[in-house]
Length: 126
Image (cartoon, rainbow, N blue to C red; front, side):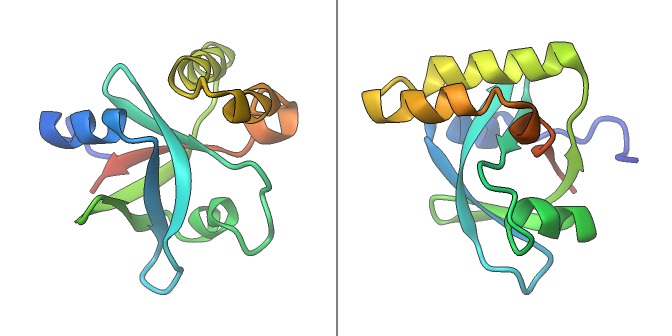
């Protein structure tokens, strides 16, 4: 369980919210992978498209400590699986609002599938 009050700074949250992709890495050995990211009420969420056995979602399941990269900045994080119907809908709405290019629409729609909903993580600072 995360300590109460562990939140990203306003500066980091604003950077995450402005960018379309962040780098994420589980543990120290896993490579950085670039993913789409959304911010909802000062909370940061990412969702896996493929959920490959060697991908970031499974890596965070095995080792929840890791890091995110925003531009040149690296921030130590802890990941946990996101749950709850209301939260899933809010995450999907946030993706639809943020990723609006014609090429993005396919992925935004695909993120609503049950399989991809299960592959949703919340990222918190550690």
